[in-house]
Image (cartoon, rainbow, N blue to C red; front, side):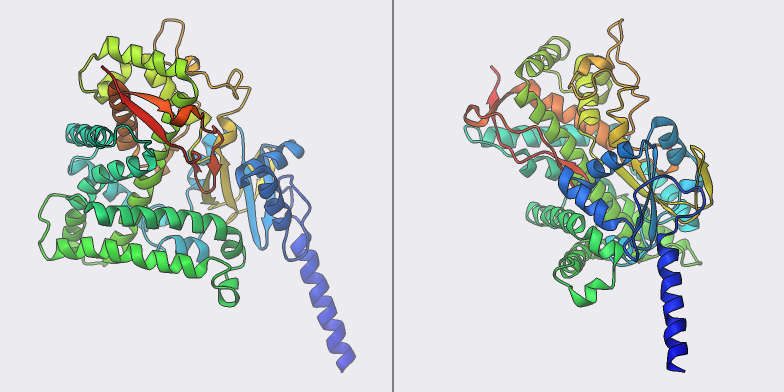
Length: 486
């Protein structure tokens, strides 16, 4: 009897091991799979060796000569997509609109499947439509938003003037300014500076914690019970709770009529009162607010910081941009319409977003049906990652892609070229809903600051141009001297 049980158990274990290392029929090329872990160890080693998961996966794709890289991370099938044609398909086809539903991604949404960034299906469609529509109704993307950005530009200039003669870290200024504009439309008010700085610290700590914990918690969520601190679970849970408290306080103030402006939270609460199906709920509102806070707090400000990093490192470019601003605008306050007149400046900002892709490995997406790509079969439910960073350095599209060259976005007539090969905000129905704020803010603030200040290296020391790449790309820590122009 015992022998029979041992034999059956051996057959079961052997069968399970064979199943874990056997690839689906016509699955995309990639590394060998090992029992239980798949190729997780190799992917982690490549990420450490090359400085980021994006660069490590890019090396693997080149090693296997494929634009469709097939992986297995523990039990999860993952395919990384390369090449403009394939990437456009992922952005635009409905089969790729899903989002993974796992413990890790629920943890990113305060422990629940809420919000619009990491949901899909009817809930996502309804709430994304509602969010985009009603942000516009309350003024998002309109003339009033541009005025709000110009007001923040004045605050930034005043802060720099107040600290003249000292070395300034833009990370203490730019995220606050972005958040002030964003929160005006979300919550109808500015967050008190002390609370705002605390919130930004939480969001930054949260991003770092997720970058470190991703491998553990995404592939083996049970490890949180054995190693709550080592896996990052304890820290993330604590930060999520603190962020949730801040959002709940804003919602509570609206419910108690302490904020009566026509903002997004009030609009959503009104919709909750009218909705008899409970489709619109306070938990979902919290998730959307978190999505907007995360989008606004880091990506836009990082682009601006990268722009100032480049002009610190390349003085001739700074002088050329300032000369264009001086000739075209003089002392006039910049607005978004000026982006067509300041051709070289706009080309420079496009090149910053190409050269320093803020989200080099976009996604993840969950495949809603089997798909054939480049002759390979990608099974339904596979997790899809999109290598936007590799597209922005593709030598088939860009001449000398590793050279920083704003002129690539200017045609022979001296006009600004279309940026059709760039996807800093994605494409399709999952395109970033805050792109109008991001574009306007980046342009107006960068031009407005450079219009008034010359930016010099601290003590003549040129900072590194190498980005730090986790979930998103960030510039290395640096400070600069801002010298008032006469």
